[in-house]
Image 1 (cartoon, rainbow, N blue to C red):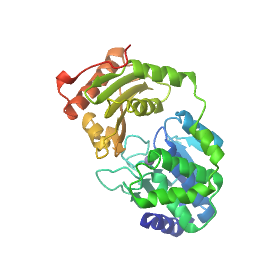
Image 2: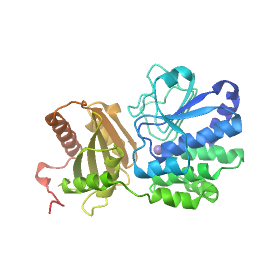
Image 3: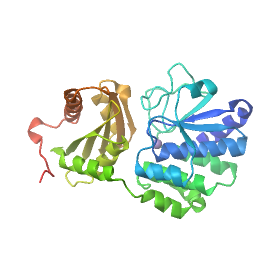
Image 4: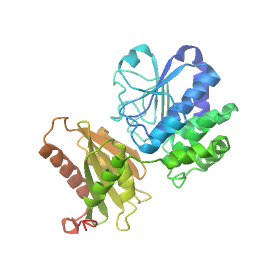
Length: 342
Ligand SMILES: [Mn+2]
């Protein structure tokens, strides 16, 4: 609640100078990033009269996220560096300057940082709110919005509800009581039909072909399941397949990779409650800042090259998996097995 008050105070104090404010999410934004940006836009514009523009790197790929943006009519723009010249003030949400999952340049200082991902040091910003226990970044914005007492439009409430649900695994990972409370406070304002449509979208053929490949190619090393998807139509497929394979009875960890536009994207998931998947994945990548995460969820990516030969991709995939196997101290005799090959 302290964070919410600090955000409100900051917007109030700087309302005259923050316009126009550029809101930047992480690349390939997830529902929490989209909800955080959308709710911050509403808060800044309707309560403080600050003009904003939402921008993101990569693409909105996951079918549910595309449905969210379409059904809730969220105006988001592809990031382009020229936007930084037109906007003196930037709010970075659900990520931080210096993380490699956003295009924010190292030589700029943002006005605002709102995030839930633990980092090695506090980001430099006009206002930096990093709360690793808030369940979802959009909880911070929701709490600020609720404190103003202003009406919450159905589109904003629906986005917030969905953002909280996805990042907390249906509130299962909402450790602090105020996270579930915030969800319950926005829910009466949400459009439940819209929420249901976002959660149960019609999926494209490619989703199933990638999923099928992920299952067939899966390899088990004791409690770790590994799969390399090869080229994917969106990096979001990597986390989706990782989450799906993690439900296999034998798996405590799942590691998936996918190739997209010259980069190898990786997702790590675990059912171990106390594990810090982000730390594990950072140890696995050559550059520690290439990965990040919170609790049992982690992601990262590294550049391989648009025209890189097949062998180079293969080698990078194999290297990451090998380092992970070592990092999790899995003995060589415990794999590989192919659980779903036939
Ligand atoms: Mn988040």
